[in-house]
Length: 358
Image: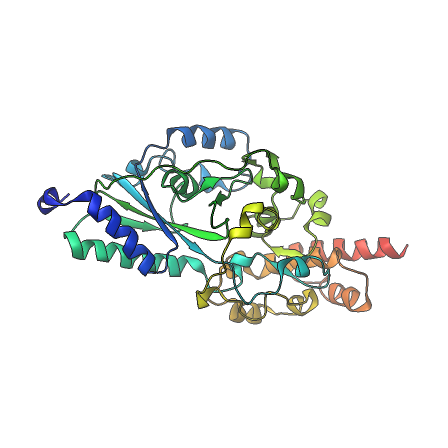
């Protein structure tokens, strides 16, 4: 802390930060301290159960994820922000899910990569604070470090962690991104959000793979988002038929959540669908070569899975689609692909259609 900060009205500054945040396009800004002991205990139990699967990064940083002051020395407060992302112009999610010829991509990934947008806005917020009080220590995070963002959001009053483990706001639903600004300024903290899930378990019931193994407990190894995005190897055969036409992520638990009747579509143009990915056919996407994939996913979060996993996911979805000559031909064109992963999943998909004809 600089010497000039001793004269700061922290209550006024805390209020001002929230105003600046709204001006920068965030829908809400909250502030909390760094005590996450209860969440650390739950994280340790989750890791010990092996629910993180191949996401080794979830435990390799020790306690830094649940102890902000160990990640960034001197951290006293965390400013959490949320930004709505539901794209206004996207095809109706349920309509896409119910059409086996179409590819379903999680709605958050239809536009530009949110990481850059949120990070840029958070840096502008940090700079406004600096202009007001002078130099201070801070770091901005958007999925870029070991940070318990959902726990911090809950503690900052941005919403509660629902039974599906996503953050829910009682007046805004759950279709929003989160970001954090770690700081050494002793700001006034907000009241943590209260849980309003009640007896509802719609998210648990709807999950295609039953990945929500208990209220507030997600076995990532069963989650379609994990299987299509995080997992780099072969998708377990037992889960393939359950993926349906979901080729990048899964929104089912949020679509069915009653609190999302209060969600508002985003007016951020960067979150608008690109390359018609909100309702493209599986066959059209399966025809992309690697150069086309790289060109059409430039600036998109989708690119992170790479071309090989992209085709792997689509092959599974084609295996779950209706048996047509076009589907059979598309899969046959990939059974001799250079990638063993693509050959394996394309062959499996063809076998599903062979079984339907027998």
